[in-house]
Amino acid sequence: MQIDAQANLRTLRDVLRYAVTRFSEGHVFYGHGQIDAFDEAVFLILRGLKLPVERLDVFLDAYLTHAEINTLLEMIERRVKKRVPSAYLLNEAWLHGYRFYVDERTIIPRSFIAELLKDGLEPWVQDPAAVRDVLDLCTGSGCLGIMAADVFPVARVDAVDVSDDALLVAKRNVEDYQLQERLTLRKSDLFESLPKKKYDLIITNPPYVTDAAMSALPREYSYEPKLALAGGTDGLDIVARILRDSRDRLKRNGTLIVEIGDGRPAFESRFASIAPTWLTTSAGDDMVFMLRQDQLP
Image (cartoon, rainbow, N blue to C red; front, side, top):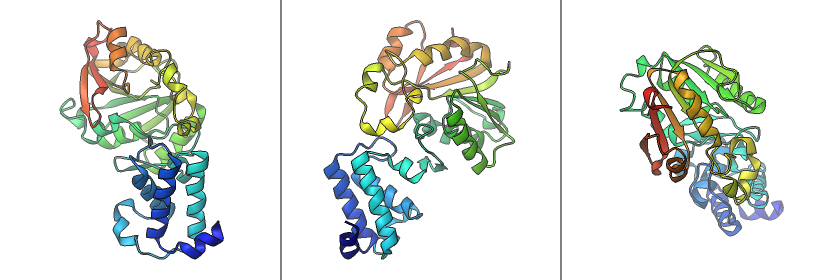
């Protein structure tokens, strides 16, 4: 296959066309940052060549070396035949302009909270400089905690996960962003092992996939830690624990922001007495909710 490829594929445009066809024919699933075969191919090929994705037009007709073509073909085949997500093939994921190292020790960064963070949580947070203490629960790769430290310039951030493996990945990302002085990684089962401290803001993208949905996930998700996905029968087991304990961990007028995917109907059924504010994201008004300290049970 490599000899044929070297004979027939010359430019980046050639390899891109080939990848789009392979992804389409192979019916790969796009759920880790890209929306279709073209976006997936552009991301995998350009980042595989260490080129900026936003400059595709500049490089389309660039000739590739045989070594580059064969490396790209190997990744394309693993993406199609093994269903390995592109982020794991590249050890790289992007979230609203932030680059993060990632491997199979932690979930691939993706969160609707990130959309809200890049805008400073306006209008819910009116003065970013007034946010002094932030907690990121279920931090995984550290992505939301790192974004929060960037957006809130004087805040000290605690980023928490129960997984030692995830925290090792997060440590690498914290060091890449040189945030060791302001962002502390902590191993804890939610609040269990945290020091007695109150926060202005708690953000969390916890496991929320239902048991039924776990059994039906595309093969790509089998590469991610089950611990980071599974949320119980209705997907809200971890959310229930967060709601139970957050009030005592927030300062007066502090804010809790939680992502629950498509779990709004289940939330409203299970927690009928709680009336959160549902925040608007690119996926609608059902993915992320906000509660103030005095609204929590």
